[in-house]
Picture 1 (cartoon, rainbow, N blue to C red):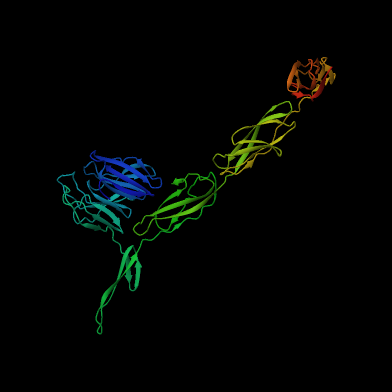
Picture 2 (cartoon, one colour):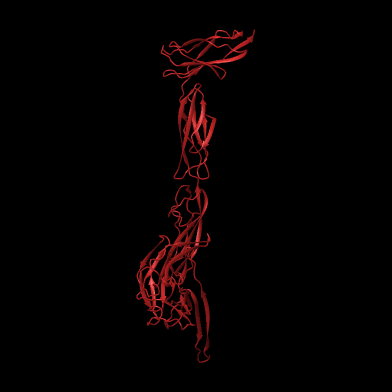
Amino acid sequence: MSGCGFAAAINGKLYLYTPCNGYSGAQSLLDVYDPVANTWTSLPSGPHPLGNGVGGAINGKLYAVGDSNGNPSAILDVYDPVANSWSTLAPMPSALSNMNGTVLNGKLYVLGGITSSFGGSNTVVTTTYVYDPVANSWSTQASLPFGVRNGAAASQGGDIYLDGGSSDVYGYDVVTTLEIFGPAPSSVCTVSGSTVTITGVGNCIVAADQPGNASYGAAPEVTYTIVVNKGNPVITWATPAAIPYGTPLSGTQLDATANVPGSFFYTSPAGLNPAGTVLPAGTSPLGAGFTPTNTQDYNPISAYVLLTVTKASTLTSLSAVTTQSVTGTTATLTAVVRPQISGSPTGTVTYKNGSTTLGSAPVGTAFSTGVLPVGNPSITAVYSGDANFTGSSSAATTVVSVAPTTVQLTPALTRVLYPLSSVPFSVTVPLKNSEFISGSITLYDGTTVINTYSLSAGGIFLGVTPSLSVGTHSLRAVYSGDSHYPPGESPIVAVTVSQL
């Protein structure tokens, strides 16, 4: 390709290198078009201002050579899309401007051009320079029949076609001929006796004649054309073994091979070059694109496999922070759900006391349960699982609770007449091994606090209620607890007040 810029396709994307920018001089602008996203993206500019550039894509990299702001140059730059960076390689054997160029069989061809700036005294050249990216070196091949600048060059079927351009330094003499350059002609076939051996791509023309003899004259020559098309490489890619969620893609899955030399690139639902990415649980297609080194005889080809990603297992553990209440134990429960490999499990955790469900909370959120029964409840946490993770249960966690202190409320009377409705009562808290007891007694009428009293060291309190109204009253005594005795409360005692 030639002119003030060029374009090339790499891994399904179009790279456009536009050295010129109107009258503002040489530039080094590089943009890429993604046909899937239908978007353009600007990439790092080339390291040298370039005008009238030629170049193309070779093995996934973009090569560019041309004059520098109108002056002849021998500089060769290459852009690597994977590294997203430019580097400078071996220069051309001589500085040129306004060349013609294209890519053929993995090499960059630069044909013709001029050896001076526009309007200079030098002439248009006929040289053919070839750059080999493997050896990072230039060579010279057969010259053009006459000098050409700013023509259109393209490769097809193992040949280079050069059309148009100009044959003088000033650009006045327009070229209207089409030149065909075969840099390395190879035989499409060979004939040995009656056996034809195919050796390349193109038209294999087999000729036959009969020289005649004493009785017959010579037979005219006849030909038969065998069209030999490019072959398709054979890709071998076994379906990868299933992997659990959280496993990054690697060469274990991206391991396609071909029967001819070349290079692979891979795709997945995560995009190009998916090595290191994690796919969701389920079935995902993986694609492999193959570019043969010998593009003259082989076509690019692709293949795909289906990768199964299974749900990853989890491990659930449970911790509890407990506080003592009057009738048992209150607990704040926290479950930790750990993934098999990586990732963050989502969903809910259900908490159970034996077979009784206490409630549930999202993963990573603490759950507080009300008063648990007195004794040693056995608590478990059950994780529900989600799209990428399987469920799991924690081991049973025993929440140790302390039995409340026994409290006995004894009213002197359970039936009284209004207005003589004050009731004497006693509250007894049995001592353990005659240990000293402290704390307070709160007397309730239903949920209403009647009064709070200090408990004597002997564990007995004697008191009298205020005058009670007509009706039935539910009295109970609640002990506050101290450093030796847990809290406790008495059974409810009903006291009835009747009208006199």
